[in-house]
Figure 1: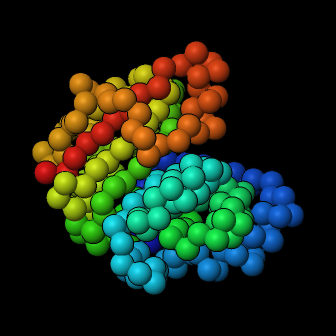
Figure 2: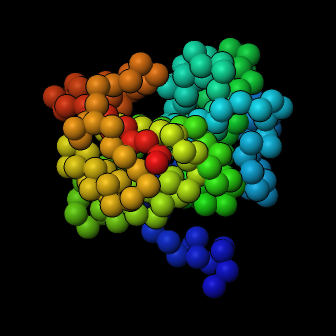
Figure 3: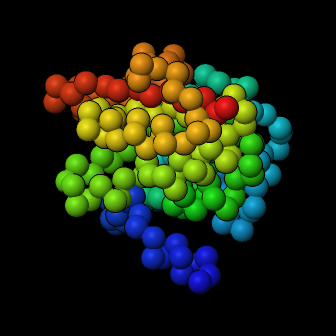
Length: 225
């Protein structure tokens, strides 16, 4: 079975819905995205940057609000953002252009494909996954991004001492994350099992929505052995 067929048959953690693009987002995708995009043929995402710097990957950056905020406040890092939905990508690259940030690159592909095929082993300082879709119905749990395959990719690409930071406002998913991550012998939980929100994570739109619904926020932090 070829890679293309395997990726087509694998259950994905997202559903592609045709989002409504604003004219500004459409223009950003056409004019700005080429400067930031990581092409699928690139076999090492570090090659997309002019400089060498510790690499941080945000999986599923949504509207890009958090990623732009982090990149502006951590200029010592290179960031790769992974997102498949065009409106969020358009909004992010427009913001990057406004801020004049050149330490971010964008992969518009499935995160598992990017981590498995475009990220070198032991090359990443941190992976950040904030408020992924919890797929709350039991029959949809197989769509959750945090699965054994995802954690295996994370463990492979993180450098020794590298960090996996996850956050969710859905307690059953938080418990799921703990169970799946701790099945890996390569990751050590730095919490009991949760941690206080690290200073590098901003409050996101999804977090504000969760808090408005009375949800508790759960941050998880794992270190690569």
